[in-house]
Length: 246
Ligand code: 6PG
Image 1: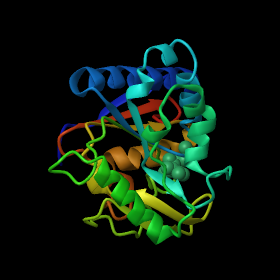
Image 2 (image 1 turned 45 degrees about the vertical axis):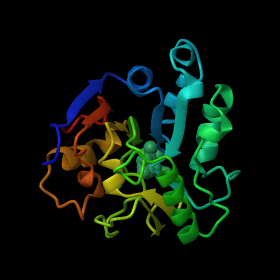
Image 3 (image 1 turned 90 degrees about the horizontal axis):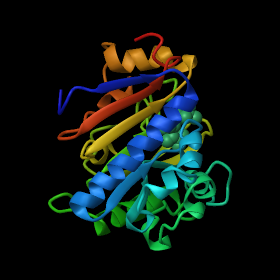
Image 4 (image 1 turned 180 degrees about the vertical axis):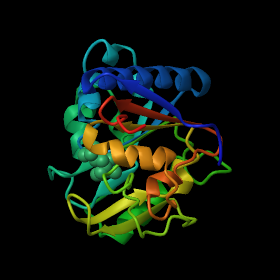
């Protein structure tokens, strides 16, 4: 097992969980800026981070973060137009990025106007332009991930090759919600992160959380198990519902 043992932090309800996540986001940003002068974060899509994004756009959190020094990337994106309700960039822009002073050039979205394979290649170039050698991609200070009922994370779904030596790939997510093409970062990029955070809430996720954390299934079956930072922290932020089977 690469890296440190996962830390599991359980909070009494989704509200307290979102505030804990906002505090961790702010603390991580300040630590990264103090050490490296910049904060590179990889955002997640899905429903769970919505409240976190809204909180970060409000006081006290919005005053705790040096937004001009933040660079935003995405762990995955749905291949729908940037104005589509299902677009992860749009979600983060609406809830957070349009309310705080992050320079446009620091917002690194997946260009979903391209076809999926081209969008993945283009995003690999974006990652390379922001790389920290010897890596060919950024070593993210904070990566936010969610967890699907089927054990997927980002858009790494069961049956999709996980050992690809490329930073981003286009995948056809037939079983996902919404179904369709996605662009996702690969485990190699996610596992280079300094702090990787699964943010998961709700009793409906408790079985899959326990399976990923403690079950014996192979990573191929539960892609979220492939997230094991090589030289970084893995933190699970859960509410009591999601931790019910731990
Ligand atoms: C996406 C996400 C995906 C998500 C999980 C959990 O773009 O859909 O990146 O991996 O995190 O599907 O989604 P919920 O938070 O909606 O349960």
